[in-house]
Every structure is written in structure tokens, then in C-alpha cells.
Length: 171
Image (tube, rainbow, N blue to C red):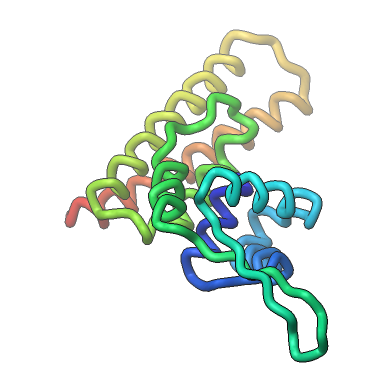
């Protein structure tokens, strides 16, 4: 997820590592707050793979600064990451899906619709699996409440996706 967030922010402007962190926190703090210890190695990986380029400068105060910008390949990688099939791990699915939707503006309308439909299919699968778990397993109070909550989250998320689906398909 960190690579997607970094590329998304660099697609908007050239930033220092501090600027990348600040923008991610400003745009996505309700979904995630990555640390510098996560951002720095991700920026290096992105640079190594040709998705980000750097420019080193000396500030007016004499301090070295490194500015990061997205490359043409980086824009394509950003789109690829957004379009990647949903994660299999249900615990990671909803946070990642929300980030992808928040970044979907950079996609072409037909790709937005495809992404939304893929996310909806996965959310429906998680919903069915959770409903089956509750129906066929004798659960105590706390696990049942947690799974009931997951069912509500999935239903709400599917409803949100249906709204996006209708908007993207012009309904």
C-alpha cells in the first residue's frame, strides 16, 4: 500500500520525503499513517525500479535536500497498483480497497468501473463467508458481535461501491 500512496502523492507534486509523509498524512490519515521507517525504503525501491527519480539540492540554509518526482513509468505503476486484484486477506481488504477508491480519479472511467466491480465481488465474497461462519458455527458473544460488525461493514461497503458503480456507468 505504501508504494501506491507515495506514487499518488508524487503524481500531484514534487516532494521531499518529509513532504511525501505530510501529504499522505493529510490525505489519508483516517485510513493509514505510515512512518518514515516505511516511507524511506519504499522511496528507494520505487527509485530503483525507475518509478521515481530524485534531484538533490542545497537549501538556502546550506542543508542538502532530496526531491522526489514520479516518472512516466511511475504513473503506469500507480495505475497498475490501483487496478491490482483485491487482497485475499480479509483483514487487509477494506483498508486497501478504501485507499484504492480514494486514488481512483487518476484512472480512465472504464478502469474505475472495472476496479469497483472487482472490489465489489471480493466484498460480496467476504460477506458470504462471514454469514456462513456465523450460521454454521456456535460462536460465543464477543466473536459473534465482531463478525456481525464485519457483515455490517461489508454491506455498507457494497452499498458504497454500488453508488460508485452507478456513477461510473452513467446510471
